[in-house]
Length: 122
Image 1 (cartoon, helix red, strand yellow):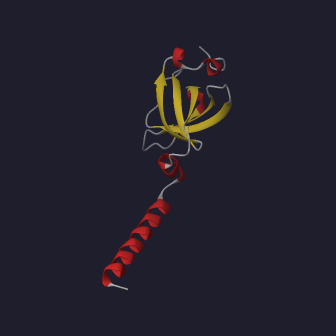
Image 2: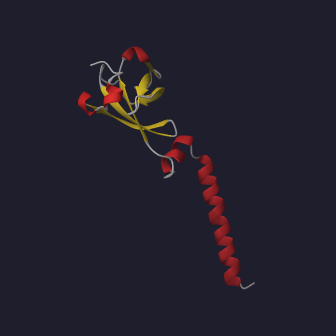
Image 3: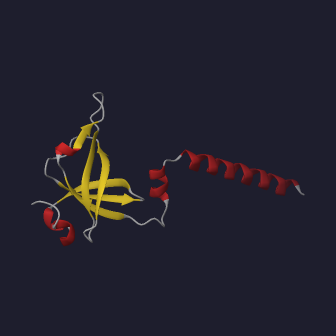
């Protein structure tokens, strides 16, 4: 083998090992976020502080476990964290991939699909 081919194989091997190491360090959420073949799902919830717990006294992270509905009216209980307490009674659209909440945003009630609206209180 020529020196150029040996060097190319060496560099390629190192690159593959680095990629494997980096991927093994990613969480399931991070892997789902990066995978373009996993579809995003939208679920809708209404915030109730009775369904929340403070993570610790040293930070303001709040964890919520709420019933959620998709645009077909299918229900699922979803747990997600917020960096601050959310507004009581607020409607949120949760964006999930592989059952992991990637993000959420507050939305108005009319923006919620009809089949999900049937389960949320106005």
